[in-house]
Image (cartoon, rainbow, N blue to C red):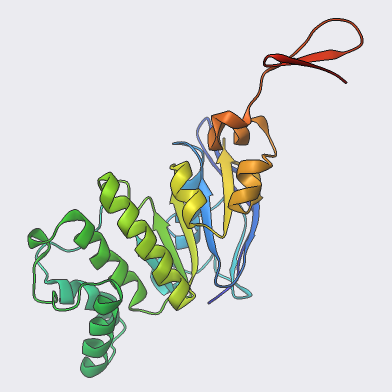
Length: 260
């Protein structure tokens, strides 16, 4: 477990401000979701933490250590992607073992840790299968096992359920939350799905235009939106059109008129 601090992160591309002074603190063991529409900056921010993108300014700090200058392969981070990103020519067991082999762990330790990780994601007994023999949901479980088997400080998940059908999304969503609770890994999760974010998160960061609009618990974001964008994006029913009518500052709220 590790606390993550993103200190005034900015990133620009030609004509686009992808991240605009993003300042966040994610607590140790927290399930923290970056929520927003396509192009809002959430995946750019996640990739900055992973080390795939270098920010123009700001600092990435994990467990009190600044890691922005550290190459991606040296950051103790588990990654789960939208498109599974597992090796099609490798067995399930070899896919999960990949990170441990790169870390030159002893063979017996690798065998034991891979078995534990597959049990955690409900794929015990599937180590010898190939990815093409697995469903989409099972392939994503392989990706999840590969991410957690290395015992990362933080787990980064980029739209991991987007390619699954509705039933599988709900099933795997619940399993991800249960796994994160049991392991206590600090997790940063990216999604554009409001319901998913509200159900799975300890806290949510709503983003738009590269900026943070609100950070809060699911209840706070839904019931106490900080901006009109948050209210409209998280739940359209949170937006009520008020039209001043009559004398004395009377407001018409739907069918009822109230004096203010």
